[in-house]
Image 1 (cartoon, rainbow, N blue to C red):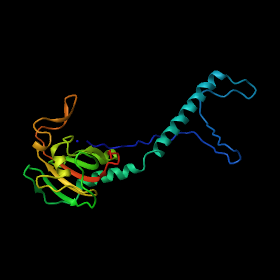
Image 2: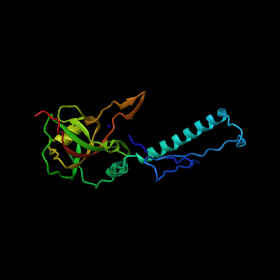
Image 3: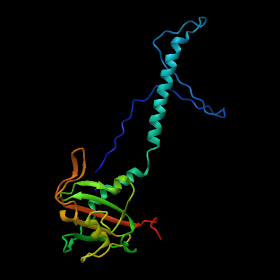
Image 4: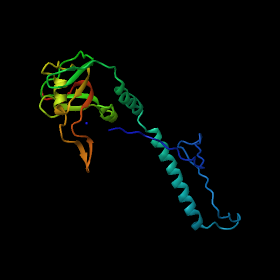
Length: 224
């Protein structure tokens, strides 16, 4: 269950000048645009076929400038915080893994204080998923929202079911808890690659996966 980086290129400043008059009820804008065509004497009529392209170009440039400004102004402020939390999960405190008979490795970074995950119910979790070499291949933090999944019914890989719900010597997670899981291939995707699209697969065959799980809570939309 891949990462992205954003880069913003700043365009050269436009030569237009904007004025916002304090003496009128609505803002007014003025634009000065240059043209290679010499201006006619004051007494001669101005030809409209020369002024139209210049005016259109001026309006177009103003529109581009306003669009660029709006993109920068409307960028979500929480994006930076999301990325920080996303990358910070890779550096969670180390803990000594315990191993269940199934081969699942687990250890609690933080033991929660809430309720256990009810079997068959929807729960909300945040996670960062890595390969055994530490390379991150997926994370809910990158998407800025937790994953809602049904636990204990085989809707997710076996290692997540057992690692969150508990069983075979693994204690159940509690809401608010953080747990690290080492999931062997037989509890993950086995001998087949996964996450394939157009011949490219995100997860190779027989991959051991590492998950940092944050049990956010029980989904509020569960049937009562």
